[in-house]
Length: 602
Image (tube, rainbow, N blue to C red):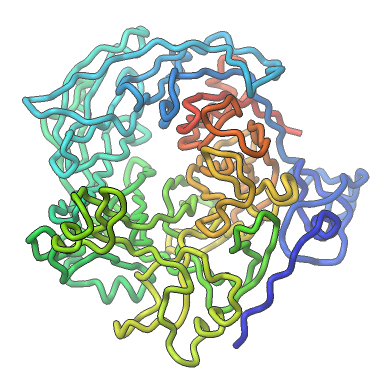
């Protein structure tokens, strides 16, 4: 079957496509036109033309609007990654990886008026908490995550040698606005995310367990469970949950849509590489109830479900997304150019995960960022690199392993959809994984599988897709920004990420405003925030798109161009907010800024 030719959008065509959709950028539905592909809507309709029953629109989602009311710069690029909020003292906490501290931002007197110039100005200042350099003689690396519950804060910190066990540091005194170091609990290798259960009774840690730079040391991925005692102190040790029960079950998991890309069978730096399932799985992010935790296994395209009572774990594969059903830009040619391609699939590979309840059932929400594996070690020259078992040498860097190639680099099976896709040529430079598409292991591929799904997805408790935002994120940003869409997160160059995961939805959180539930999705590269009304997971409505960025071509992160790379989102309800208005707190990693958006229901 031949791939569909790509079609180029001019400005007029974008307006036409926008008019054919059923959801507006401001959340209000306009007059319904002929059914077209999903995307942003055109002009606001008159009252009664709400796209529901044609009466007064009272049952329709009216959406929200967002304004930045406060902002803080933590002193360096790469400083603000994970944010948390302590409602009792109206304090924002944020990780500062630039100097390995925790920023403390007093937010008790937030303004309610939008900032006049949020790109170039700040109105919040931060003090900081300095972390210890070592615990029990183990030198610590840079913190990765924080979590707050009541009077306690938990801080995830890997060991300086990332393949060694890391620690969770505990601080108390938050209720008195005087955080003080309390204790440390050893956890697994590379603790990358930490969270409390809603009742504060347990702390859960996603231990990613990444291999060393040359892949010769590969610790097992795991989840640590730390009980919080009645004395409001952590237990002395964590309970460890691993995935060894799944060793030898690669085939069964791959049949569910998971993948296990690794250099097993090769010898690197004198070490014969092996990889069990337990080693290959790398827990990324956790969302939890008091009874059950859900953990993304990003690189492997799965989710683990952890029973917190029995400490048993189930692994579920997420399958793939068929890009022939949606529009995607796969060329970095400086313009908006969408196409639909048979033989091209997206591997969800979610980063952040959240959850909410509808009809008493739990639904999961994932931000489908995508992630390739790439491991590089130092070598003196090309000869030394290749002699050590490396694949390529580049200015002192020796490539130990990667699963990333371009579509044109795959060897196509004769008569396959991949062969047609390569003949079409438009997707040739798109980055794809070698971890899927070669079921029989003969080195020939029948299709191409690209990283991430350029979307967010709602899943039911059976692991089935209830809703996927499809091609919304790219099409909406293309309508708003034109050729400046699919920008990078450190330099303004329009259409510079179309061949590599596009907007990269990375962060997601859920918040309830009145009787409506909203999902907030942050795109790492573009920097924009998408808001969807997900009250009914079977009737999801696009509500708002917001961005705080100067997109002037050629400017870089070294210039003052706004908020770059939203890494974490925290929703603050009106009841907990210092301004009595719901808020969205954002840690913007590349710009080193914390931004506070005020949310208004339209």
